[in-house]
Length: 248
Image (cartoon, rainbow, N blue to C red; front, side, top):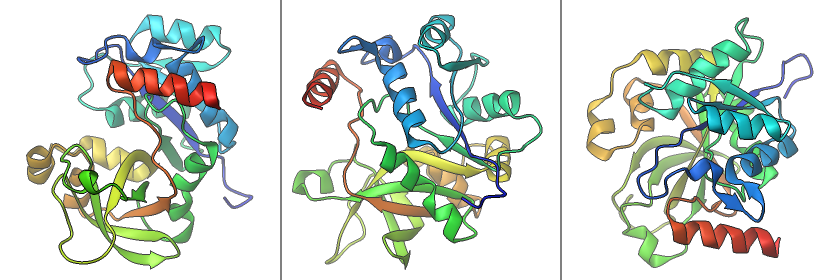
């Protein structure tokens, strides 16, 4: 980040509705609610102020009791990106922070360095959106539709320009496959445009929100990182997260 730039704004969207793990943001992980763990890891990254954006008063109360910032948002948002944009407008209405970092609230073991690296591509190119991925080493993951793959062309040291995201096994032929991880660093103007767009054809077909940006012509650059932060979607994931953090 250049010295004359304002720090980026880090926003973690959170809601109580989760079919496989109800009340997920408040799930206890070794004595600390999951959403609080994520926010504290984000603070440790040191890239800018951190806030949790939620439509649930119980989440906001827990976040604020931990000494962190919570922003109440509408309860009718279609996506986390919409919630993040509303929160950004409330936290920074003058637009002092040009970059808005959207971190998922269900990755309690996320490393601060991974958070910092997610925004790196924006400092290296004119990309409107940046995210991260890791090379797939497990053969089963290559054909697993729940593992989203990014297809990209190299534009720098461990940086790809995204050409497509898919649940299929792609690209064909010899070479690495990359697992996309859903952290997004948005240029503010791009996020504003994104949330004004209707769902796109490929977005609906693949059920991948980031395809809306690609279909609109936005450039997405991807930083390659060393490991995938565990996402908590099921009770089994939650138990694994507790074990990982306990082993610390």
